[in-house]
Each structure stands twice: as C-alpha cells, then as structure tokens.
Image (cartoon, rainbow, N blue to C red; front, top):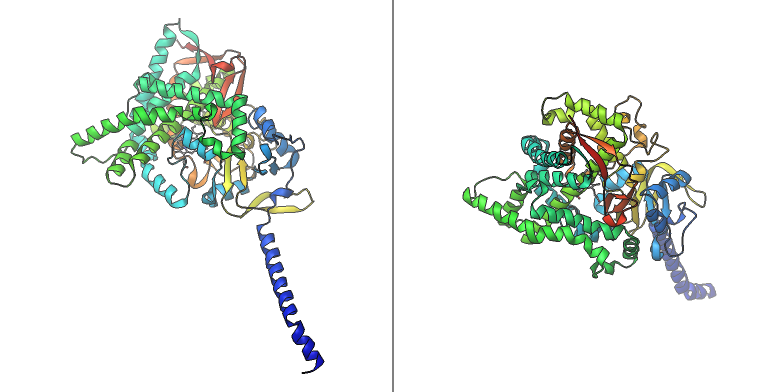
Length: 535
Ligand code: HEM
C-alpha cells in the first residue's frame, strides 16, 4: 500500500463525516427555508406598547378604526404585536389571501385560541365550534335543510305571523304612550327575531318574546355582553391569548358569556325537546321533520348524534339565530332615523304592496330594502373580526404584493403552523381606499350604476362583503337572517316613523358588534330611537 493510499484510507472517515454534515446542513437549510415564515418581516405599525403590543390600540379605538389607519399606511397585509409578548398577529385585508383561507384552506385554519373557547361559551359545542373537515361536514349536512330557500318560502306565513305578533305588541306599547315614545330598539328587535327563529327552526312559541324563557334568553345576552366590553374584560381577553388556561377559571367577565347558552341548555331546550317528542309520538313517530329541532331529535333517536350534541346544537342555533340579526335590525332603524330621506324612500317602496310582500317579492321586487340591508351589513357587520389559527405551514397568495421591512416584494407570504391570522371584517368594509364616503350610510351605492368599487377590490362573500363570511364555513343562517330582516323591517316601516334622539352611540365588540350609549355605559347595549305611530 502506497503512502497516498495510506493517507487516503486514513482520511476516509473524515470525508464521510464531512459529506454527511454537508447533506444534513443542506437538508436543514432547505427545511429551514421551507418552514421560514415571512410574517416576521412584514411591515408593522410604529406605536407598539410594551405590555399591550398593538392590541390595546385596536380595542380602545372604535371597532376597526386603528386597523384601517394602519392599512392606509402599510397596505393590505401587515402584522401587529400581540399583548403580553404573544406571537405577532398577521392582519390580512387582501381579498385574494382571504379567499385562499376561507374558500380553499378553511379546514387548515381553525378558530383561534381566543375565539374557539368563546364560541363554546357563547353558543355551545355545535356547528360554529366544531373543527376538522369530516366532523364539520357531518354537522353541516345534519342541520342544513331548514335553511334552504324552498323551506323558507314554505315557512313564509309563519315568519310573517311571528314577526307581526311583536310588531302588534310594539303598536300597543306606543299607542299607550300617546302614539310616540323613545324605545331601546334592541328590546324590540330582540323579541321579534327570537320569535321568528323559535317558530321557524324550533317549532316553538316564544310568545312574542314575552315568555319567561324568552325574557331569560334576552336578558342573558345583555348580562353576557356587559362585562366583556369593560376594560377588565379587555384585559382578560388579552391574557387569554397568552394563557389559554384562563378559559377554564371562574373569571366573571369570561364565564358571563355562557349565561344565555346555559339558560337555553338547562331550561327551554329541555321543554322544546320534550314537547316535540310528545308531538312525534302522537303521530306514531312517522312524521318527517323539516324543522331543525325535529331533525336533531330524529338524529338522536337514530343514534347518529349524542344527547349532549343535541343540546349543544340547540343552544348554538337559538343564540346565533337571534343575536346578530337583532343588532342588524336595530342599526338599520337607527340609521334610518338619522337619514329621513332614506327612511321615506324605503317606506314608499314597501307601501306599494298591499299587505306583506311575498317571499319572492322580498327577493326581487324591493331593491331599496335590499340596498338598505346590504349597506347596514357593510357598516355594521355582526361579527366585526375573524381570527384563525394556521394548523399547517402554508403559503398565502396575495392580490396586492407587500413590501417587507427589508425591501423584498412578496406576491405570497409563507406562514408557519401556529400563526394567528386576523381578518378585520369591519375595517375591510370601510376602507377609505376602496369605499367612497366609507363611514356614511348610503344605500344608493348598491343600486347606482357606478356606486360600487371595482369587484377586484372587494372580497368574494355574499354581496362582495364578509358579513356572512365566505366558503364552506360561511353563515348557514344567512338566508333566514336576510328574509326575517326584510319581513320585520317592512312591517315596522309601514307602521312607524323613527327619529334620532341625539344620544351619542359608540360601537363595542363583545364577539358581536354592540351599540352603547356613551353617557350610559352601565345600561349595557342600547339603541334608543324616538318612535312614532304613523297615521
Ligand atoms: C345578520 C345576521 C347574521 C350575521 C351577520 C351572521 C354572520 C356570521 C358569520 C360572519 C359567520 C362566520 C363565523 C366564523 O367563521 O367565525 C357565521 C357563522 C354561522 N352562523 Fe351566522 N350570522 C347571522 C345570522 C345567523 C342566523 C339567523 C343563524 C341561525 C339561525 C346563524 C347561524 C350561524 C352558524 C351556525 C354559523 C357557523 C357555520 C359553520 O361554521 O359552518 N347565523 N355567521
């Protein structure tokens, strides 16, 4: 063996180690590059606070306001610092990126660690809470039939009747006060919506919102909302992002959110189920149920769902069914009180019909009513923020490129598993760069030929808004919400006129968007309007 051969043999282990190291380093670098997140290098607002990051600024301003201002400075995609040193939050207002998450990858983006326990507290562990494609699709199939157009059309007489009970009660209330008085609209819209939801999806009579159960449910909403919008509630919310264990502790502001759900699950749901079972037995258990309650009871009897799921779904639909529509109707009437010309125009349109318009009339022959609804849901989306958590590494495509802090232009951004993504619906609906006179109530923009921004600047959901979200997890109750909104408003606008009381209203977020009278925060959510019986 030559000296060279000797040395080569001697070097062999070192070459092997060097080669292996190279392979590992290359693989490591590749995987690092693969898993690298772009979020760290995204633009960020200047004024981060040590403890609060940017979250206090978001909370203390009007809903969506701070994020809108940051969009103007930083563009449609940026990050904010979370409170208590939690990882940065990706803020996404880019329609292409949003469609990617909501339409294509929704099952890879779960409700965030703040949102999911909150949904469980507010609604129950039903359709709005479930995660995972198979389970979600199973639940969605189970509950979808009552929300179809054809079912709603069939139920139209019930919707009209359930709404008119409350409108008649309101008529009596105002007549007894010389035909004119201030009312908190939320009290009345709450009763009307709950009465319709009870009738249509649970075959249950809430007695015009006056029954003991109805009162407990409506009262629970008020009590559940109040603590969380106070500063202590905010503090708790921020702590939740960092310390999710707090979800399970008996903290007032957090556990108050469960009041309505508990009232439903332990009280009215039990009676509903019992009565429906008796009805079914009387029919020899042969009747096919079209309403949601009947379908759920059938599924439980057939062993397809557990008794626990039966009650979780009932509370989910009682609460989600009345909460947001209640606020939407109140916001509309308040805007109509402040815009008398729009109020008169709407009244004229509805008054052309003798009696209550039919289901099809509401869909196609009342364009101004439709525009009023769209404009309300643009300005006051029931759920102002959406927050999702990436369950996998992902690459989010962007319609508008973002320039990173180190000067790179990105047409897509990579995010890592565990990334929180905020979609600020209310900010997106009011971007000054997109919407003309963004904060103004202008229903005409939905009718005039050049009233709307170009479609590429808008999102892909219902009416190019995110009011009902988008994709496979969009709002399952949207058709019912729209229909009952129109029926209730049409009945009210032809009987009453509304006037602004001058009370200063501020908007608060307690999961859903809530109106508060600035000088009376202790009263909880309120929407006062002076209401007058028409001759
Ligand atoms: C104006 C009224 C309403 C608005 C603005 C609204 C808005 C929304 C939004 C934005 C979502 C998506 C939430 C998320 O992914 O985090 C949603 C989901 C949902 N909504 Fe609505 N909603 C309304 C009325 C209703 C009604 C009347 C019902 C039932 C009777 C209902 C039941 C639900 C349910 C069960 C989900 C969860 C759907 C799923 O995850 O598959 N909503 N809603």
